[in-house]
Image 1 (cartoon, rainbow, N blue to C red):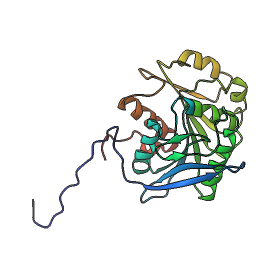
Image 2: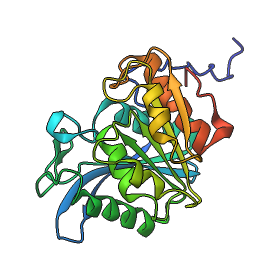
Image 3: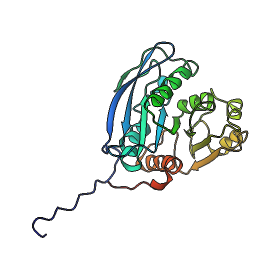
Length: 245
C-alpha cells in the first residue's frame, strides 16, 4: 500500500446480532387517557428519513413486546441501510428490556389510543410518510384502526385475523392506502390459502406467501425476507438490502 493512502474500509457481515449506526432516542408517548408508553425512535445518522415505520408488536400476553426480534432488527438495520426511521413502543401494560408502559392490556380495544399516541408523536416530529408495520396481534391493531389515519399504508406480518375480521378489512376499500400482508407458508393461525380467501374482501390488498416461513419468522433468512419486503414497499430504491455494510 502506498504511504499516506487510507486503508480500505472493512465490510461488516450482517447477522442476527448486527446493530448498524443510527440515532437512537428513548421516547415517552402520552395517550389520550393519560398513560405513558415507553418507546424508542431510531433515525438515520446523516439523511432525513424517506419514511417512518410505526411498529406494532405481537400479543403481549404471549411474550410480544417492542423488542420482539423482527422489530428490533428493523430498528438495528433500516435507518442505516434504507434511510428509514423506526418507532417501536410497548403498548399499554407491556414490559420489555426497554421498560414498562403504564396501564393494562386492553385486548386490542383500548390500544387504539396507543396507536393514536404514536401517530401524534410522529406528527410532532414531522416524520412522514408513516407506514404501520404490525406483527400478529399488531396486525389486528393496524387493520382495525389504521384505515382512517394519516398513513401511507400498512404491512402485516403473520396476520391471524382474530380480533380483526373481514368487516374491518372492508373499511380499507377506497381508503387510498396500501395494505401488504406477508403470510408464512407454515403459519399456525392463518396460512396462505385461507388468508387469500379472507383477504378477498379487499381486492387492493397484496398477499405475499413466504415459502418455508413460520409465524414467528425465526432465522436470518426469514428476517431478511421480511425486511426486504418492507423496503420494497417503503423505499424501493434500496431494495434488495445488502448482506454487508
